[in-house]
Length: 109
Image (cartoon, rainbow, N blue to C red; front, top):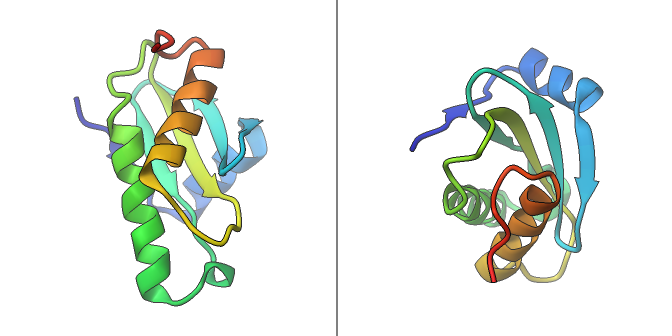
């Protein structure tokens, strides 16, 4: 199962304004109902240089991909929190917790 990418600033702003914000330790996830699953990752310059930002984006995209397909399609915006180090396992765990709380996936043991 694939997801589409939210690329335009208007699309991302619409999700930020109209979506439901859910917070976990390593990230904030914004959800908005949609006909297809669409996702974007927003990592600002405060997270470091381009190498660090791109690594964070790769980790988040891969962690999200592990939870596809979702039970109901939605637009998802992933916003990491500023930390000293970033780990795939933590991102994956936190994404899973949020999606399970929102009943978009079955909770894993």
